[in-house]
Amino acid sequence: MAQLLYLSSGAQETIEKIQCWSTPDAPITIGNIYSDLFKSLDAYDAILIGMHADQRRLAAHTGELAAYLERGGTIVANGHVAYPYLPQIAPFQPIPDYRRDDLIVYRDSLHPVWDGVATEDLSQRRGVAGFYARGWHAPPPSAQVIHSIGDARRPVDFMYRVGSGRVLFHGGNELWAFDDGTSTAGRLAPQLFAWLSAGKRNS
Image 1: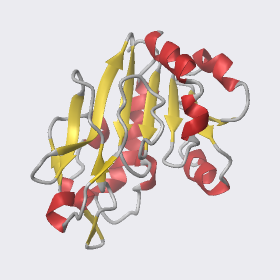
Image 2: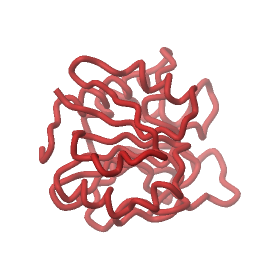
Image 3: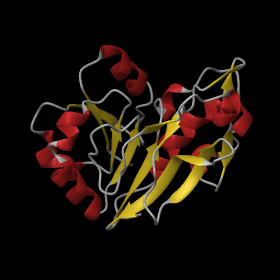
Image 4: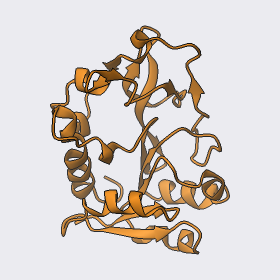
């Protein structure tokens, strides 16, 4: 069993979206990002950070987050980074005057969270491109890039190590929000939480 912590800024809609994935094998605790929970991060195997988390608050606790990773924790972070709050993470870079081809998703390496998920189903949703990513983040040099977009292959999803821990980063809307029931993208959320429930600290 893995203990998961979702860092919440208080939006009820985002809390409801994450709570539905809480299971006996991977229970999700909703933690108030404005509380003193940063003192007890080691109680959790993984931390989940959403698109709309208060990054200024997170940036004020980069030391605690980095130490948690060094000791073997996992952080799954989503969104456009404006205030870097994780070790080695770079700010979001929008694509100026992007066209549809700039938003096509390419798979650069395999990862269990995206097993069986067609890149076509990430590139567009109901015929519209850009839901998955509209910009990019420069990954750390040692990162495993999982997906990139456009002919320029700008990185969108990547995983990298920090000490004994790991960061799985997606530069867009929450990975658990793609379950629309109409495409293989619906595999993302259940596979993400299966991956987290199978992984204990330092694994």
